Image 1 (cartoon, rainbow, N blue to C red):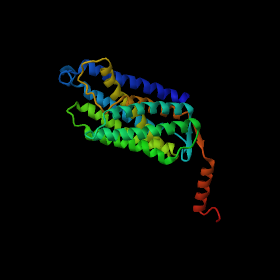
Image 2 (cartoon, one colour):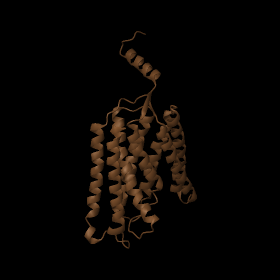
Image 3 (tube, rainbow, N blue to C red):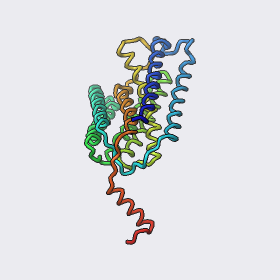
Image 4 (cartoon, one colour):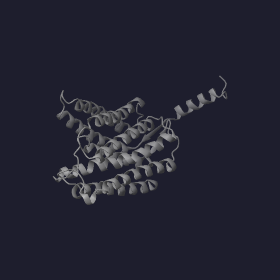
Length: 285
């Protein structure tokens, strides 16, 4: 757990600072009537975005050069705390499914699509949470669901973003979903036993940025809604409480993975070793 302490502290501090400053921007720096920054704060938004993308680049570089794992091919992650965490995220996914079901209609095709993919994601999280808790090896094909979920959600959000809104809201939301696609793809390969060392590095390099962006996009929105504050911040229907839960889940998953038990299927490893030796001509047929 010691090697997970520093990443935990760093991420927590950065998440609080980025989301906190975004809330401060929304309340004090933006004209609620126009949605634009007051003249004296005109340059703050650019500095903030540069800072966010600077953190993303830093996370990527750190992951590429410092994350070291054994080859997780044919390995299995077993952790009851991670299983419980996954089931909690499933509950948020179910809640979001219910929300989309309440607005579903034949005239609102995006709501139909989002309902379907959230149902699929909820079922996946239920299954994966049980597998993590019990140590049962999950079916590899099931991990296509979160990858498809991220891709469809990115496409729907990109297509539906036709409102006249602040450019920074578009940039942050689309970037968040883009990194989510990268994370869930790497996540799928790692948890289905197909990961290489590069896959693991990419999962950490994309995971922490998407967690940070999820909180940065969603927390200010719900802060404004909760306290009924008049603000020029764009209240996007594509950002939800599920994003807050997902951001926390991804960050905790990556941190806990540093100390999680990794179960190796020795039979598969031996079979692959024999096959490799046979192909190299070191084993007689």
